[in-house]
Amino acid sequence: MLSQAGWVFMAMSHARHLRDRSNVLNDFSVEVTTKDTAQLAAMSGAIPKGTIISIPFLSTESDADRIMAAKMVRQAGYEPLPHIAARRLGSEAMLSAMLSALVNDAQVSRLLLIAGDADPPKGPFLDTATILRSGLLEQHGIRHVSIAGHPEGHPVQNAAMLRNALMEKRQIMEAAGIEGSIFTQFAFASEPVLAWIGELRRLGIEIPIHVGIPGPASVRTLLKFAAVCGVSASTAVLKKYGLSITQLLSSAGPDSLVSEYATALSNADCGDVRLHFYPFGGLRKTVDWLQVCRMQAP
Image (tube, rainbow, N blue to C red):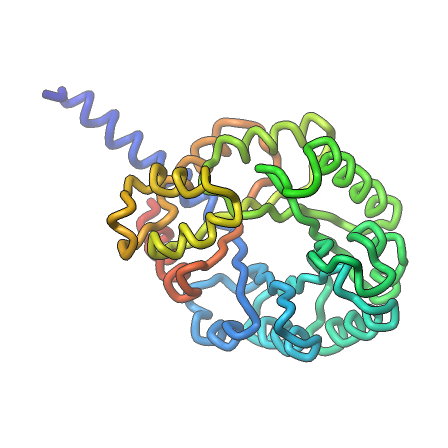
């Protein structure tokens, strides 16, 4: 049976845990697909104004769709972060036209650049570094560029290649006077991500890192997205949420994962690290979860 001192210690630990989680949720970002951007206006009370809203580059959508999505994000009071897939761009003129429209119609000042999966490339851009070297971003007033991070590896590039590519892109951006940040893939375990962050900091890469978090969803949906990471990820999903294969329709939230990051980031010098939510179970479910977490904080 716990003594009074023991109960006080537990209460203090719980309060610190809630405070740490509150701190890590103070400056989050969210990925919102083009079709879901229309919901943002109705969520203005749940998502703080100025929050970064990333907009993925989907092959099923047109440039006009992407530009309209960025415009709707801006009109709702948020900071649009459109993704641009280098290998899917047909020409420099196409990129220039898209940048012009994004800047003029949605006051976009930041982008997230990814290589994309088109093989061979549809135009002159082989990767994100090719876009960074083109000078087009500076010409159109883009002041901040985010790049992709892969804490758990990449299906084509090994760890050394990924590390060298990050260093190269950072050097190009520094030379061009462009601010940078990193957005990672979603992961179901914090340990490899925190180790990866530590390695980047030791290499002198000090730019902000937005860590990918899977939003609340059914176990079936989480396993579906985990499949892109390999079979081991499926096991990690079930272990992380204390679920079994017979509970596929149960819903799981990222409470334990967020708590792990909150504790680690409060005790270690990881630099500027924030959470980036992928709403696999739907935007409303993720926003509701965030709102409850923020309300529970002391």
